Image (tube, rainbow, N blue to C red; front, side, top):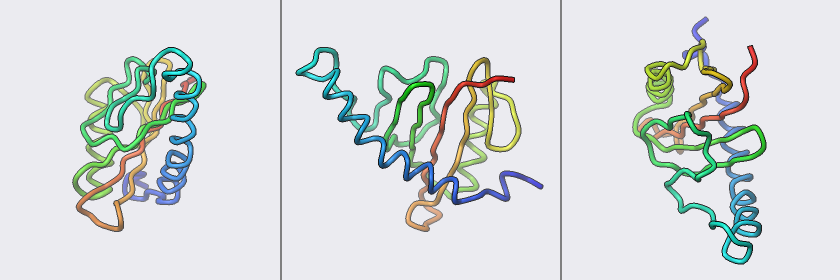
Length: 139
């Protein structure tokens, strides 16, 4: 069974919903504890990765919709052109070309693993959400 062809859209919906609900809380946390009133820097502008994004984890081309950084995890949501299947394949190819290994939508490199899920935006094959989750990897 080809895991790319038999994707579970529920995973994409759950991860996208988690990102959508957690990102405002993460921005509020950053502003409250590290923003203008608490010293440090405010939350990054939309479309940019925050400085706390894991080093050594590149992000493929696409328009950044949001991020969520927490203890031992990081998530980014991108908007890319094309359908979900094409977006998944090109995202996996992007990471494999940079030394990430694994099968299907789960890849690992060094002490990190990523999981990639995709979902067509508004049921359209013209634009797709790509959600990339980064967490620790143990063999």
